[in-house]
Length: 193
Length: 127
Picture 1 (tube, rainbow over the protein chains, first blue to last red):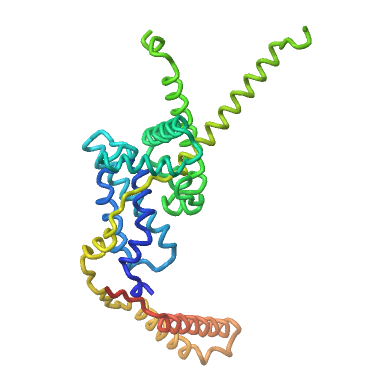
Picture 2 (cartoon, rainbow over the protein chains, first blue to last red):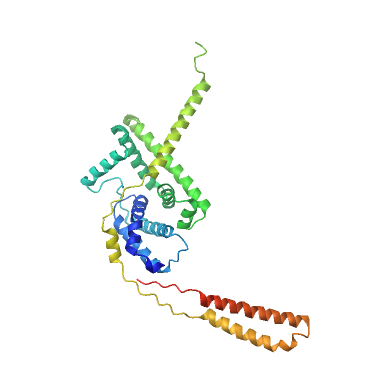
């Protein structure tokens, strides 16, 4: 079965998922392509041993999480400031993103769009303040729509622990956003006192 | 006029309602934001480049050690020897009869295990 698989086709089928998960987990567009390559290299090396006990997707999520963890460790060593995933790589891409956003929310006026974009950025920022495992669980559950069982399988932890991390992560995220909103709403003269 | 004026408990409950509504709206917005996946920029030739960069996999050469099979063969030989060695005592007492049956059953189980193992298809990977 395995020898019939075309590796290029496997990459094409899963590249979108790998890129978006890495983007969310790392909160940065920097090195994403290199990390994605690393993911597929690890998958390629592991394929001969892959006997189909788990879905290829679940297996791939496990590799993505491992690669992201290695990147977090590397970053902690270097301690470089993060570049937000919402920050554009170039001005050209910025205009593209704006157009995509506008097309994605045709019903919203400019102010609402701005507010939604700011809120999205605030969520991305707070997501990066969570612990690695909480962020991973939130991304896999909400963005990738994985079940508790699949997340537990990918992260090799009990389902109860997944639920706890999800609940705790959401709580921290909500509190962080509320705190951020309070700071924004408070006038400058109040905050200087 | 007095009927229309709000008492403190009304205003408190209204405030609580408003806070609850605000919290629900915030929850919904957070969920929506989390469900909105970032849009990755993937080069059109990414898959082809990655596939081309992969190092050639060495064909997996499995040299079967056969420890399990050898052990099973030895067990079968020993069991066979025991069966024949105690065959003349089999009718002497119920104990020897049951011992003989135990040896036979073990021999049969090992034989079945070996047969199943031989029939199992081998997995190979070719690049």
